[in-house]
Amino acid sequence: MTPRKAIILGAAGRDFHDFNVFFRHNPAYRVVAFTAAQIPYIQHRTYPAALAGPRYPAGIPVFPEEDLPRLIRRHGVDDVFFAYSDVTHAHVMHLASQALAAGASFQLLGPRDTMLAAKKPVVAIVGARTGCGKSTVTRYVFNVLRGKGLQPVVVRHPMPYHALDHAVECYRTVQDVHDANITIEEMEEYQQHVEQGGTVFAGVDYAMILEQAESAGDIILWDGGNNDMAFYRPDLTVTVLDPLRPGQEDGWHPGEANIRAADILVLNKINQATPAAVEQAIAAARRLNPSAALVTMESHASVDHPERVAGRSVLVIEDAPSVTHGGLSEAVGAAMARQLEARPVDPRDYAVGSLREVYERFPQLGAVLPSLGYSPQQREELRQTILNVPCDAVLLGTPADLGTLFQLDKAVARVRFEARDVSRPTLRDLLWARLRKVLPR
Image 1 (cartoon, rainbow, N blue to C red):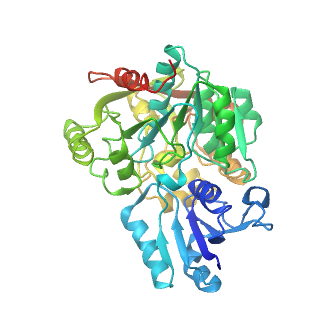
Image 2 (image 1 turned 180 degrees about the horizontal axis):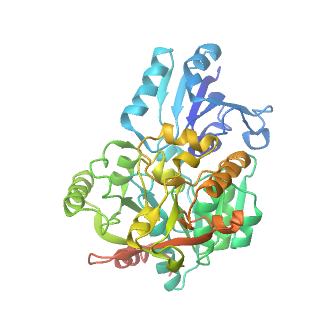
Image 3 (image 1 turned 30 degrees about the horizontal axis):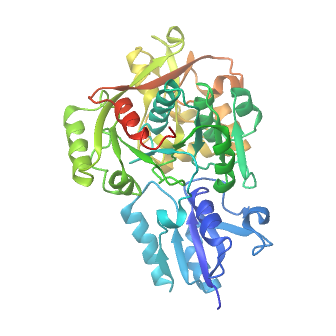
């Protein structure tokens, strides 16, 4: 049988996972290319032969997503598979229209084809949108499990931005994170977990990661990226919603699927949203998944050195995904600056290189600097931009410790935040009531 030629549309995450578990050894398909979106500097690279397997001795090339129609026609592609997250349903169907117009079929792989079965219990923390507070809730759940005498291990959704050939990565200390020469985006996600004593696994091959994670702890805690679904079959799915973006619950892929698949729905940040927005989000959650338990939580921020910021001129640096493709104009850093009566300095006129272009690409951005550092060059542009901004202090809304990374000559303060229960029963109560049924006795 002649294999069907396929292209996988991705963003350096689910695309590689779907290839590994569904296509790598599948004689019915021949993957001719990946395409890349959302994440810069991934296109024009090659998924390495060492991970692609013996059927792909030259590896698999990665092209910009805008090349899709040309690639379909050039290679006679039969099937296009969509494999990334945090996009509107309309965005997915516009790409489907491009594929159909060029003669190919358009598909999405589902959980039965892509979720791996674990030998240890799995709790998946996923979201309706990027920036809803998944990692904050993941840290909360980590502490609940550890408080019950368990040894949870965090597995982070893939972020292979610095290298595509690292099948398994493991971080146990802050020094591990700093020594790894990873991107700022990866540092943001890994550092916050190791700072509370957790071990974090990530990489590209999630079957190999699963083997190591199972041997390292009692229970696996999946920390999702964007609003993607988990790669491991969960015993319990917790989906986090954001009342700061009411009305988006059923408009984004695969966030709507996460809401519908949840065992527990967490409406986070209710202390930051209006009562009307909270009620709108609750109504949408109950409409999409009336059988799930629903809890409300507050997200509380604090600053490690408020005296460095209060009443002073500050540069606010926010977690990049939240204020770029996540659609927010600002995040926790700006909120804390206002609370401390600081005077934020607009960084637009001081941005250099690709950071200047980001403000044009994402016009909703407010007077904050996204912590972009997907390449050594962009990391240097971020450092130079920070130095260019005339301010008394830098307020980090990002979990990455840029003050240490860049050895800044300005005062630096970091925002820390935690999830707190509001409703009863609490998330802690619901987690433990359900997990007792799957934990070894």
